[in-house]
Image (tube, rainbow, N blue to C red):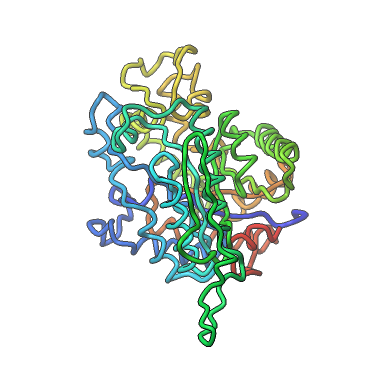
Length: 435
């Protein structure tokens, strides 16, 4: 028995886009992928299963890095198309009661005031269940859609993000908690002495403030971050309430990563227990070990059959065209990227074919088997790592997968006392910090 429960969250990999159109269980509504239906089904399952939150991944360009063309991405519906995640949030909120909802909003694509206002509005309409997945743009195609030729150099992007997060959090707090009076007799809707301009003038931004709406139910909403590089980890240790990571694929590396984050948090004067590190997991569960392994095997066959789909994804997140490399020759150590540095670092020295094979195992651990088997693995790993939980994902899930996770795996985790059976609080931040 774990000493304390651990958290579960869901990473909506590949964002608000088509999911199950190539699945053996595609559903009857694949041509309605742009409607919220399957995402509502997922959110209701997560809410039922006691998940802390769902992150909606996003990017706002049609990739063209692989072979210098967007054709492969469009052929598979991979990494594109994507609709705006902020549009999906109110639909999910209307069909759930507790689940935290975390759209991805990039500091290189929003002005700070616009982002602060959007998140504040969503915090109000969800009654305190919104979060912000704070990302920096990494693909030059994205920069070109916003009037720039290239993305800012990697480490400087985090300098921009530091100032951006400072401005946004100050805007969220620019109305004091009791600024709204609502007294029709005086009359006084809000007390002007409790609403404050921030008058920010920094290196990258100039913002007067205050927000033109009251403080949201949570005030400063939970910030999610996934920086894997040293500079990204430093940013996350300063700002994040929960960090998402693959942890390096071993118990030792997961523990080392979490220990590093907590050490950095202490150095910054933060309570390390208020940063929840969640590790990516891609479970395949079925009624027998054999059935689950067959499912995983079919996934591996598909990955090898469609190598170009996997390579195009690697190309997108690094800005390197992987069609130029021999599939069976190790990647050269001199490769560099202004994109996802932590991903490239894991691939150096491996052959592209080996990387594609490992794609089917996703985050390194093979969470394949019956609910009892997979729950036991998760229990053992968390006990060794020390916390704080898992971030489940499947880029192209179908409704069968939702049921297997939310009504198969999760009840077994709950039976073991490993995850929550009910929510103790109304607001996302409070549930995240419950244990």
